Length: 95
Length: 167
Image 1 (tube, rainbow over the protein chains, first blue to last red):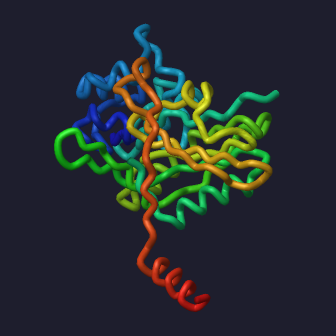
Image 2: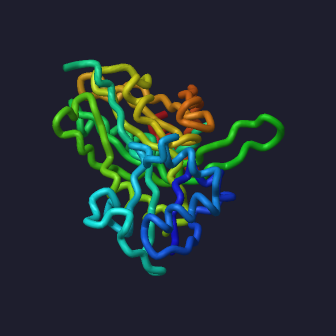
């Protein structure tokens, strides 16, 4: 299946915006991604192996954190995974 | 350096005025162009801006957040146009056009530009850009980034024509 890489992480996929990775579940595809592109791993996961809090991963239009089967969700060749870091901020100086 | 067309620059500033006293936010689509020559800085060349919704309705006057699902759609839109996400913009209502601790803590798009416009009493005042530099979350920094504003020939000609007419 295809995985779409956000701009900052393309330095670790040889500049590719879309990479093709084999796997039967979301979890296995994601694991294979870090095997094919090992430099991505510290940017996606904490040293404890958890997905970093600001990294969002979408299977088509669904956040994988909220899928009933989460990482065990089946993945097909026609599905797409998108990695999208969060965007937030603000002055936060007034009550 | 950030390079942006005058019309887009004015549009994102107007967005901040429109949402005042709340923060506005949006995405910059374009291309990151490597600097020419040794040590030359790369350029984030903005070719389109996309308005986004601020999901922080609980504290929209001093916080912003773009829903990840909206970002996924915007990234899809960028891909269809052959463009990339090269940065973001938001406003600071009645607050300087400088990044805050919150802005820094919540910034994760390394090598992207973060534009901030101060909006005072509903009027856009200063617009600054900051490049999120570094290679990891642990060594990232916000660096002041020059902004080059392009004026299309037809706009320049129209301005010249108007000036001539007023002379």
